[in-house]
Image (cartoon, rainbow, N blue to C red; front, top):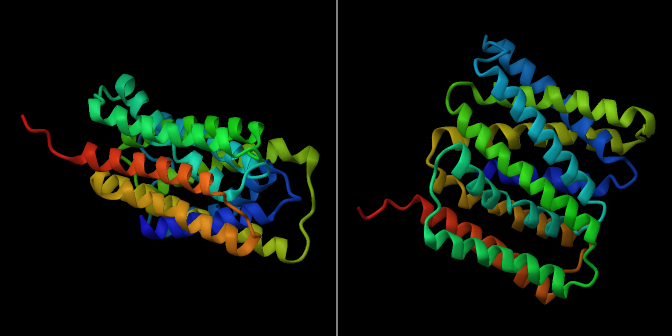
Length: 273
């Protein structure tokens, strides 16, 4: 999970840097470059490319590309650390979806932690006057779909290899990214080519290790670690893009992450029954 968060933080920084290239074109390059790794791995290890749970694999790809596209769009309007923090509201939406799709139950204390995280969002919007409302809407909807991704991956379980899951996601994202960017295509120049290839490299390792972590370990063991991506990304935003975070912004981000980490830890505790 730590490897995954480092990889995603590097990918986030590249996305933020590519200000002149549209979100769907970034989706295309991020996905098509990853296909070299996923197809190569599957062929080399003789793993069936089509997998077993094909309907769920396709659904994971569709839900995932919607979330990713909206996230990339939001980075045009929000500081990258803020965007990543808000996207990590996904576990709250995942918990609500799990009530209906996985028949899980939310414990009373979890609602307190969820309220803490939502309070962070309210503080972020209420006191950060420069926070763009459209960007906020994009990232919240992205988080909702990201929550659905968790549910679908849980449904797939260990029935498919992690790289098969990622490969479906990349194939669908490549098709969607190309279809929606072809009419607004901007030819990359110079180092932009290396950055676009880097999207695929970092995105591939981020996806594979995240999927593998959730498949092989208890959620309460790995879930808190994924919030390291916020810290890594926030630091990269300050160092590389001179982003400025107010005291209210940092307090809000701390509330969001604290609420989500406490929820992940609490949820993983065995019940006293």
